[in-house]
Image (cartoon, rainbow, N blue to C red):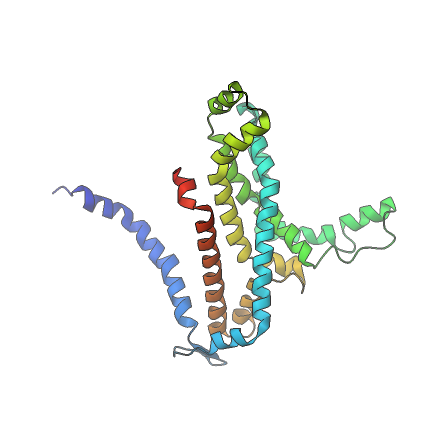
Length: 286
């Protein structure tokens, strides 16, 4: 007995749907439910209370760290875009014979672990690190600089380095799909390089730009390892407030509430961003 097209399509999407429900939707639902529970030294009790959210609202430190997280994430996204767009444009305009080599060089640092790529900043920026050693050797400074590491600025630099690929790749894919005939037509109509870029290249690459910005912003908002290793006390982010609730204080309910707050705030930011730039028009081409 042959299945009709509708049932066949349902069977095809069922594995992916089940996977999303089990590994994406269910954990978020459990997290939301746990945020209303209570935790003690004996474990977590599945009751119904708003105490966890009351703790968050009454302690201003959570609000300050959340604002700092959003500020760092926006700054990291902007810096990543400024660095990544020229890189992506350079890659997209290379001859096919050498483009593969440049792509391999781009991906090469990312073959190592995320933690390793973050940890490498410690020997570079520490008191006895490479940067201080070079500056001392050149006579630019007389003693090692202490502010190179464990600051908010270090968190910015490390996050930009770690997440650059997530910005470069979608922009490169958008630029690489632009038909060269469009650029040639703009030149034939008298448009200079800058006007061609502004009126042709940039609008056509906006899907990649927006995709990269969204990915980097989301990843930066949830960053934990990087600010933990190089940020110090002044460069902490909201993830560094959430993690100890699970690993140190054993207050899983408060950790769940903090996670829900972060998810809701980031989702609202993306919704506002989507309304501002009209994502549907950009991605669909309307």
